[in-house]
Image 1 (cartoon, rainbow, N blue to C red):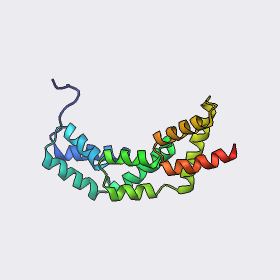
Image 2: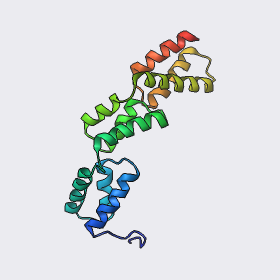
Image 3: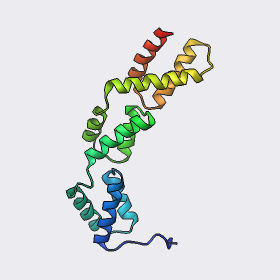
Length: 162
């Protein structure tokens, strides 16, 4: 059964205007917009036509979206590059734009964030065994999407400070 509140949109111009508002509110990937247009009940030809018009009007820009997503997830959620990359792949962003977006993250800020999350987690751990403690910190950071070699680098420095 169709939800009466979810009316189907059949007018392409109205859909274009509504999609423009959808994109202006927040950066979107092409796939997110495509999914939304299909959800509204538009035909494939209309969907692709609207996407082309949104790109022409600079409402939709995959590179801009990828950079905003990467920087946002890094700063707001302290995600590592692996987790950010997975998120962008789920949004079907091309690999070349994913690489550009990940390269836009400042390396020093990246290491500082990694150090911060490790230090915060270390305070919460009640583990007395050094190896187990280190392993738990490492797994936590890897789970947040940080690369194993970066985690090892920070933990080496962190262990040295203790």
